[in-house]
Image (cartoon, rainbow, N blue to C red):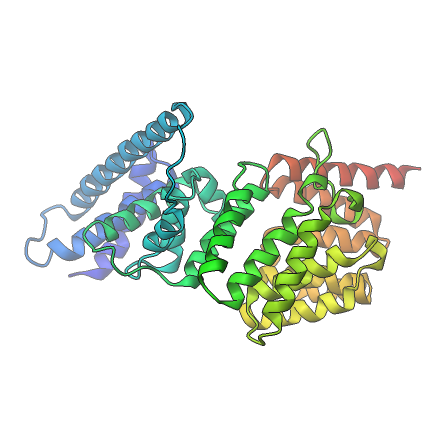
Length: 381
């Protein structure tokens, strides 16, 4: 097998597919499939025209994927058009399906994607948005996961950690307001907490309850976002907050800290503050330090930079931000906020406008655009 030949042909084959009408991401996937097939077939049966062979196979793979994508979209549309279901059965096996879709033969990311699509009720577009990847890429990932499990026995359920990750993503999608799945995620997590004595299950349930308690105040009547500091705390659900704090305290007492418990502790500190000004930002930074140690997540470190800016001043926050990759989602928005707090209104306005162009949804884009306009108006006075 001449690997150098394959590498040299790849750009031109990719270019041909794009010129024929394939979008770049789908063309890349098709060419990769063709290369895998070439590695398998060519040693025993080398083609006379390697480039033509690759183009033909890649184009067929692209067409197969495109047809499958059209069929998938049609199936999703048909599901949306179905009438409301009748009475639910007395036996609820939804949580068991979550475990079965998190099969050990799948990677965690594939298991999460498959479960969100097959059981969680999310469309491929919503899952792709959650993972910040193109819809076509996510469709292929889900299709590969289905092929992987198509011939295996579902007698080995997945682990609790993967199921928790799926439940958390379902909750976040529902919490965003795009589709109302938050209550269902809480219901299933309650079931899991009743069935499994696990501090991270309790931590996730506490986190969901504490976030869900603020849901009514997260947006204005016109649909615009209301930042945490500006939310009317009288509208928070104190019953859910009390339950979440109680569950969290019991989980923390077991001294087996995990990421969901740490996130819930941060949410509890926000919920416990009577006003935004009374938030215990020093403790929140300490919990972010624990969370960063547990996850090593750049998104956690981005949120930590905000907390540092509140606890130690905006310049300390900007110093923490400078250590992070500026391509991180919402990095520019955080920089804008910290520059505004530092009094640099011109830089902040520019960054708010830049962040608006990168916003993942309309509500966030409108919010950031208004922030830029507000600062520009202040500067012109």
